[in-house]
Length: 160
Image 1 (cartoon, rainbow, N blue to C red):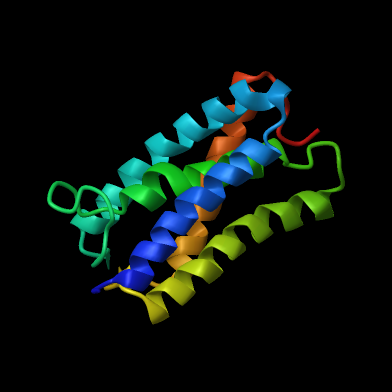
Image 2 (cartoon, helix red, strand yellow):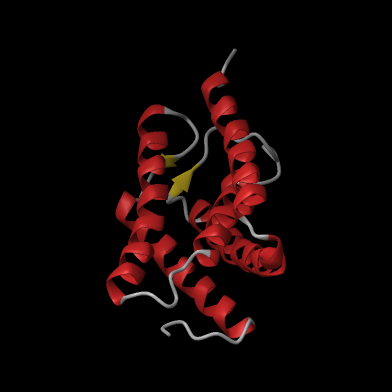
């Protein structure tokens, strides 16, 4: 069966992110989580389409919308926004600058490590005119923008 590993990885990612969101989102923070998730979808969907249309990245195997969209629906529309919701919910607002900085770099780093593995060993993503550091930079920026939007929307300060 062609693309068996890719299909397994993509389906597993949906399941894992779903379970993480259910398990790690406190009931009192569901509304916050949804706002973060939806805001991140807007950013990632736009940037995801842009990098594919500019031929910087391609997604040779996609589980959803293979004929209508060249971006990765799973990553841009669900996996990454879901992980970002958790990233923002657990941002250490009242902690030291060091902890905030570590949090801000660990989140994107974990995603980029998985992306590098996917580029090397699967057909889920292919860099054309792209490199891992561009992924890190764009993930870091969109995480920061999402955290800033979250804090503005819920009237909290980014650096308390």
